[in-house]
Amino acid sequence: MALDKRFIGREYGPYRYTLGEEKMREFTLALGGAKPGAGTPGEPPAHVSPLLHDAQAAKAGPHGGLIAFPSFAVVFAIRPFSAAIADPELNINMQMVVHGEQDLEFLDVMRPGDVMTTTGRIADLYERARMGFVIVTSESRNQHGALVVKGTWTAIVRG
Image (cartoon, rainbow, N blue to C red; front, side, top):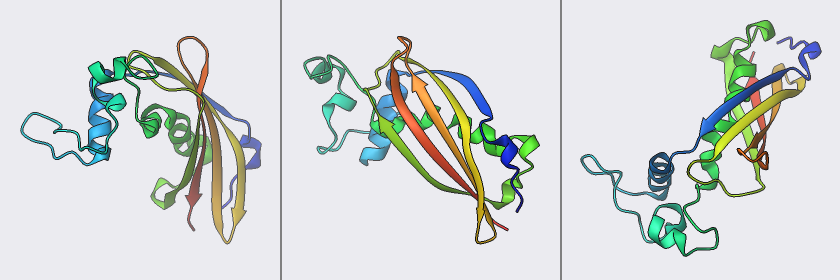
């Protein structure tokens, strides 16, 4: 596996994504273990915070409205990582790629209607134990320019 270090620093994006209330709610309920029914994502289990699914209750909460489950950020923040490993110039055999890990740092909450703009760059390329490692960092900012999520994504290329 030969990864060309000249691609370190290559940038991807910007990618824009608008957070939707229903998609955020469905994501929360799916991760929270709701049992879906016909045409409904299901009722929220008691352990799921109403700040994540109940607009009325969230309005009285500390953020003044619904917020996204933190890992919802993966929906939009993964785009530079996906673009990097699929970049034809890197010549990565996609059949040999394993998603190694991801690390997200949350600097603010995400709200319905937020327009997130995500950019990323290849931070490192290296080989270890006959496998290639592709490290991509990303930043997602809301429509006000505030940095909301920072990510570090690792792909392992076997072989």
